[in-house]
Image (cartoon, rainbow, N blue to C red; front, side, top):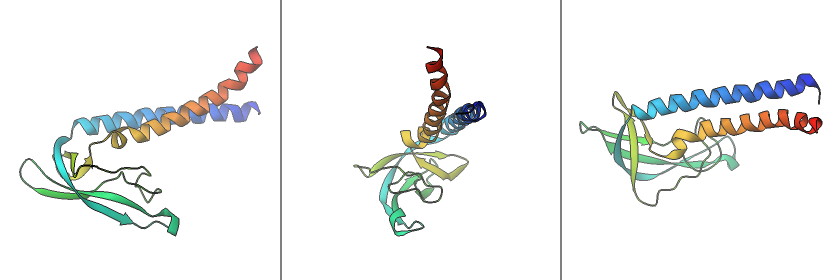
Length: 145
């Protein structure tokens, strides 16, 4: 591997690392400014993808805000391949009652209160940054011996 391409791998790893930190901080701030409540899982909405193999389903949840406004939303975490901005993750509620977090200034900005919603994106970027950074340092480590 040439020095230029290996430096490119390191730079890409560092960029992923910076974006994972920014993504985590933004999600953490958003999460802490949201209000927690309990919602009811209504059903799973089937969503068609670009081809027959990319279909998925996403939970539709209903909840009431503190002031009694009833909100229904479709979660970003579902099952099936990636569809639009939806994440490709497995989610099934065993209990129709689910924890929900929503923005008190805009209750339609709501999500199921789950580890995946908060940390999946940053962890995925962090994983790739570590892989690229280790890929850069591994050959250099072997050559030092």
